[in-house]
Image 1 (cartoon, each protein chain N blue to C red):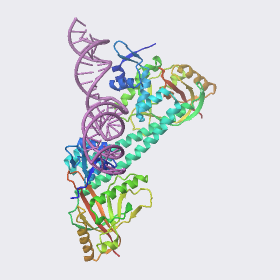
Image 2: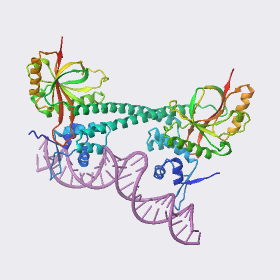
Image 3: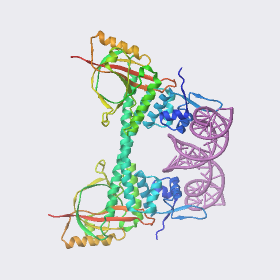
Length: 279
Length: 279
DNA sequence: AAAAACCCTGACCTTACCTTAGAGTTTTGG
DNA sequence: CCAAAACTCTAAGGTAAGGTCAGGGTTTTT
């Protein structure tokens, strides 16, 4: 026999793994050196063992844990290898889908930060085109304007839980808002029972998912919920002064929320908006 | 002030995280409870802190580590958030690409296992169509047939290192083979200086990358390098008996290699092949 | 006032290794 | 042949983001 034995260092170099790794594989029993000196405990590997190490590395590439690898190697059952591979494939597919979702979320986060950086001054009024959006809406018995922010938080939390419980995709995009009916806005009654989360355009259809159509909106920007009533008043006045026709519900949209600071309050950036009709 | 304090359990439930997690966040300093009883060490959270926790969870969704999150929260710098996000995006993109590679590898592994299960008997001769393949070839001065398998292993290892050093994509698909020139095969000279690895169809162009054209091949199957010479002889005889015209180089292809068993040798499955021309 | 529910700290567990320390072994050079 | 260099061993402790458990204190409920 050509028993060309290698010491652990050679074996490691030969296979481009670390010595530590080989020792670990020995310990967990997936690659025992073909001979171990009982006196010195030195490990000696045969060149033939490279094959097994290759297989281990290959299986690791496939995303298996050492435990899974051990099981397969012990059983030496081809059936099992195949079924393991098939379930791995499914798993990887899911991971890819997850990462793609994350990717989208990051992209939106970047947009969001950019928007924050370029945010107009508080109180600024604009008339702008906003393209269509999809929202997941929840109705509540409480009127948000009768309570403080903590109630809003709680309900928003309910909403998210709601989504999760229904097995709907997690919404990473945490932008949200509330809706007030047009009639109430016209009277400045400040009454809202609807809260929503923006969802992706490809979000599955659902009774709570609604499309907000694109339109020209009259908007006013502000940076805290506190002054909402006052700003809503200004927005309404502005529309009246310009003889704009309000053609839909009022939306209070949370554009960005950054809680990077140690302050106790959220640093928010809001856009109050009503759709307009120009005949 | 509405200092509606929550104990850790409430806070955890409210935000759907575990108590342990909140304690961890306290320890690493990304979310300190707004009040801690100095006697009992009980942690009390304010509802306003939910905002910060939201942000933390959001950043985690984006794939940031707690360390990264802490940095951002400490600096509170929007610029930095943005650049972090941008680099995250790149990272996620790479991860997705990696996973896709892995996915392909798994698919091929499944095919490979299936092929192994359905492998014909050793010695079986077929004439079959094999569609085009892409290979990364390396030339060596040594003739594989003058040495034993360990030399082949070593050179294969060199080849892989070669690939990595050149910054080419890692080849997970570990199927490989050797090439013998047609003339040598016709004389059964058993001389091969070229070893190759199969690569993906979309592998970047490179001077060492060669396309093996599709063709009808005369093939013989076997399960060890040992008998290669003998099997090659049989293949040649077969072609002669049938008056087949050999129109290209001889390939010894390693179809599958399973080292699931504790034996010292590789359990291989090979296909020797020569392309034929039917006018 | 007792029981139930809750909270604390500290320690150890997970994966797939890496690092370091201190001691022993083999190889190399002179 | 002997010293130095290079190598190897074990054992312990670290990583990230928590989970789990034990033993003991605190709050809330009954």
